[in-house]
Length: 316
Image 1 (cartoon, rainbow, N blue to C red):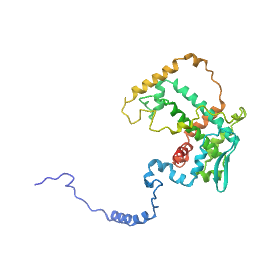
Image 2 (image 1 turned 135 degrees about the horizontal axis):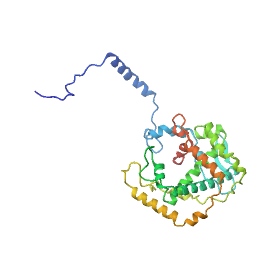
Image 3 (image 1 turned 180 degrees about the vertical axis):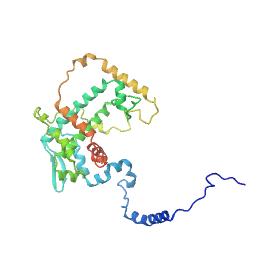
Image 4 (image 1 turned 60 degrees about the horizontal axis):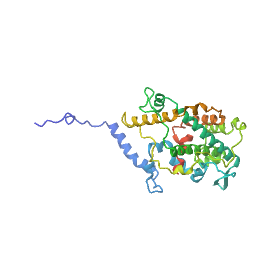
């Protein structure tokens, strides 16, 4: 007598009529629903559009937003400030020529320079922050720190590249702020929320501008280097990821941390001689950076916030 498994000895029972009827209704409705779905066109590179519909693309909805915007003008909006005293030509939209005025460009030069000072302050803070604290900063869980501390990038070219990207982000949104709401909505493919306008206007019209003159154009930032933007993204400054086994890469990171500590302690008199100067404009920019980093998604759509929307711009 052949012995069967416990699963094979189970008797299959007929589904109730209600379930059968429901399944039949679904089968009949499926062709109609599929017919209503838009066809999947091929992208310009020949890649099916469905290949772009990852979870991240669904959350940002860049295919919808950027498809309705003016990509050429979006790229121009993100240019770093001109070094000559002349307006920046943005493009022509709906028959209207768009410019960023000389005064606005001078203001952006001051903001870019203040961003460099702000980044210098942040780097100084990281260098003199204890390793245990930087492990907590890098961690994702509230009950335990990460196995390796948060580190600064090691390559100067990478540092300049990251700085330039953030500068471009600031220039992008302040130039958008200078457009009329209807023009900005038409170019972006979405409109700035009231909260986003308040964030940008808080810095753009801050009383701090009355305490210091606008930067004269022609004085470029020491970190302004366009050639750094061509650096390959494969040259990563971080050798340790969250997916690595515990302990992997920790020794190398610890050695790097020791090197940084040695560099910071080789000339202690230099640090003692440095006097902390007040930087009201840098403080105002820091407040904007914090607001942008903690901005909530609108209706769960990541592309609705300033930083995430701009992150799609370099790939246009």
